[in-house]
Length: 142
Image (cartoon, rainbow, N blue to C red):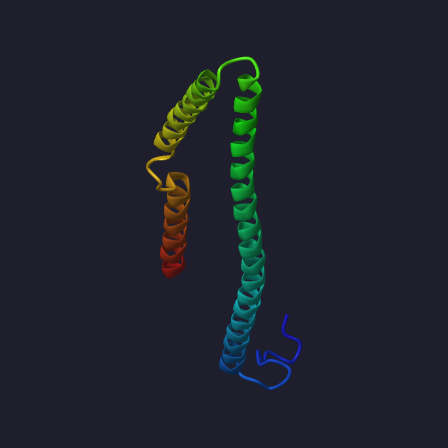
């Protein structure tokens, strides 16, 4: 609705081109500010992720030593009822059997993960591109 007798100029006297330039400038500033905020947030999260990864690595090393101690304990316990060589042999076979089973399961998981291309996401992006192209074509026709 035009209230000032048919004039379409904005109330502050700025032309449409000036308003478009202001809007573009403000959008540009907004995008830069949002990118700076995102960068700061990602940096903080990456720092925490790095510390967490370091702690996980330390925990993994300690768990590995702990498993070695558990295996040594099993050998010592079996040595109480069997000769030492038999206790070591039984524990060795058990550990190797577990390792083989884990390797087979791990290999099957890796095979299931290939190819590493995110096909569902790629299809979604392709569909989005087609929608945008169609919208641009429709906009040119109107």
